[in-house]
Length: 509
Image (cartoon, rainbow, N blue to C red):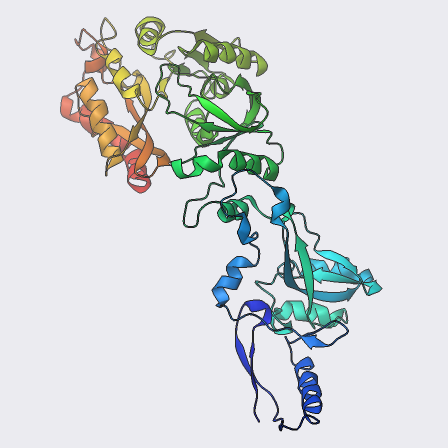
């Protein structure tokens, strides 16, 4: 009789093993002998292991390979639908491969087995051998190591050098809540097929989540899992409305953990302190803050129209630039003052608590009149940052005929960096057209658009950069000799100045 055994080493692949011929008759006296012969054959086959003193071999349940792959490190199925976190319900035993080695060579061997070793939260990769005090068991990744043939050549070479048998054994590993990742826990708890929240914005000790409707019944559990699985996080909050008020903050709900919203963050070498429940802060804008800061050099001037707690103003001031920073929110104004002192730039930043339009038509106008009247040698480069994506484009109207007198040379006209959201199929063109419509001119040839980040599906945050044309900025458009140029030449020069940046637009959008 020929027996075929379906072999599933740890449930990850299938192989049919053809065993030697065994003649098994109906005689009861011959059955034990045949069984003994069969078990001896199995014990000599790689990947078939006999368990315990009773010498019984294990058989794997007939399930598809991909199911076992997914379920091996998944929490127990009975946690599905849990809304109140019960950590004790996450106990599970999994069967994994192990390699037995002498304890004195473990440290040398582990350097070569990094790929193959098991990596799970809270689990040691090397444990004591319960049957041999002089040996250790190295826990192996069951997704990578099925039999001794699963080791790479370099790994087998090291095993041979250290006189270690590559023979694999099995070990029952007890898993608890601490050993599962947050995404694995939430995927097991939430309804099947639903999106899983495992990411968040970190603001100091606060995890800021944006939960979707189907996740709200599990919000307390999700918040607690975020706290448990992320060291340093002691509070989890959920935004419960959009940023639609004039102070640019939003209502939030504490899902789990402490109620304290006073926090401290470190971004690009600078420290900021604030009450997160009362001001706007987005850690995902760190790169954008750096990008704008790098555009300015010592001696330049920055007008920050919607400054928040200072992520543009403070780094720019540290470059020995002059900064005028404004925010309408009294809490932002308060923490802006505090953070300027904290970062020792309070002597370089003039701070205002005004509506953006009033700031532009008041302090900005006065300073521009003085700056642009300076001699050519003394004129600084002037930048105006308008980071209020929901409404900043509307404030561009404040630049129309803002200044009196004769226009200055084009090269000294202020450079505006204006932020906006777009859901258009061509977001760069959409932002350019909307900004141009407010100013009453075309920005096609004299602007660049930078993709800042993807906010949501089909929603982008962008920054349009351009020099304010003299025809927009000045009431009196009489040209002085310094500024006299034929219009075609002027358009060509402006277009060339922005050609490199427009190349960047195409790649970003």
